[in-house]
Length: 176
Image (cartoon, rainbow, N blue to C red; front, top):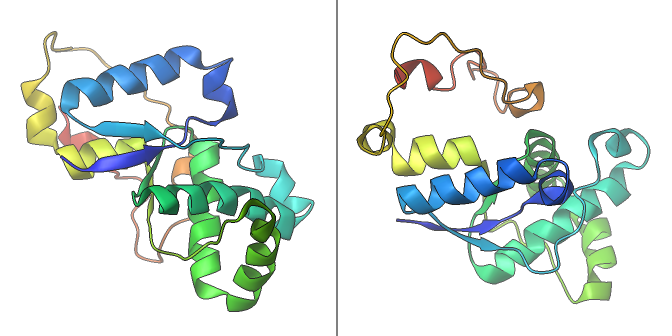
């Protein structure tokens, strides 16, 4: 099984501690190894990208650069943090000028964004790395005939990662 650098984010340390515990226990049960990014910082909070894009990108890039040092793709459970770090990673890979500005700031921590890893939401890790058939093998209490309305956060699917991405089908319909 693939190993991931793990970014818990600010909320999972306090107000969403139960989400952090359930993420760690689910990963353990499914054989996913998560190694927390040492000395991680806030991802820049969603609204901060509208205040100072370079600084907000730098905050996310610092976490990504530390995961690069670990040599592992990044797994992020919070949808807001995922959005920030996914887009920072994507934009820095495309925009050399932005990457140069961000890397100048990262030099203070002896870090550099190299664009060598991917940023994944935990749902993507479970569905794409573990796979739905393997997840089904671990179900101990099937929730048959139960109608559920999952909420994984709108920021997980918007904006689209690509023009042809179907944001209405992340594979959850195939879990039943």
